[in-house]
Image (cartoon, rainbow, N blue to C red; front, side, top):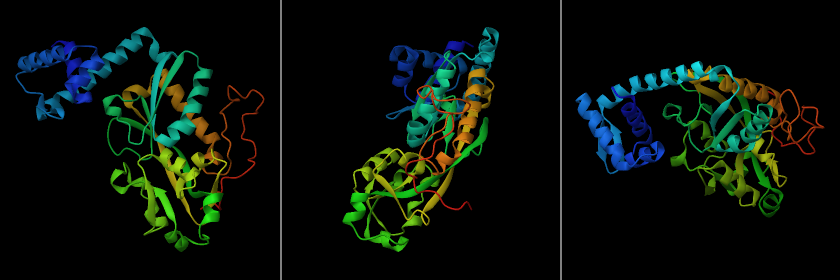
Length: 331
């Protein structure tokens, strides 16, 4: 069996279209199509059903996919082991995360990590969906749900708190909010139910059942931006709201939601030195930043030492000039 044919097969399975697979392989579409057709003839089985949407795996294709992934992983491990890369802090690591955490927490932490390890480069994928590790979209994923199956190493990374926020201007222009029932008279900003990628994001209905959603978006950053402009109230992660001086907490001791982040890596990637180093770094960073993730401070901390642009700091978060309003007794 020609390994190059398996490589083409794997890329089509991941891309789900011949055109996208050809682009990622650096080949012509006709070459990919010809290689696939020849491979299917050699096997005596049809691996994909072609349709207007792309190429869907047949049952025979799914059977081959598992073996092909194992072969690819074994070959990659063997190559890195022989080259010594699995034991060296060298190479590129790609991390996927939810949009808010990836943009406002993970990105600066990864910059700090790469500053400490100049031979490691990092890709950040902040997306409003789950990162597909089985399609090699990333080496490590930060997820709001714990995977229930699959060949993954999983660990709880941190808890984080969400609260209700609005601008001072919005609160001045609208009726007072003294209890949850008052929210029915206000415009809220949140997720569209049919666009939720996780049930962990379905919290607005419990906080303000029947409330009018003025702006809906699949993006928490879009919700954050709309709330900053004074267009309504939004339930936001405290670590995200802390980046705005214009947002104020509303019903801080009554409206609180706690969720978790999980760190996930495929078993075959977890042992690589650069992935292991990043895994340990992120665990240490989140341990150091529990007050920030829970809304007890507005300042991020840097694990072990100061951030690259803050040589005068001690590495511990300084007292906040203004709390985020998420603080409450621990339960």
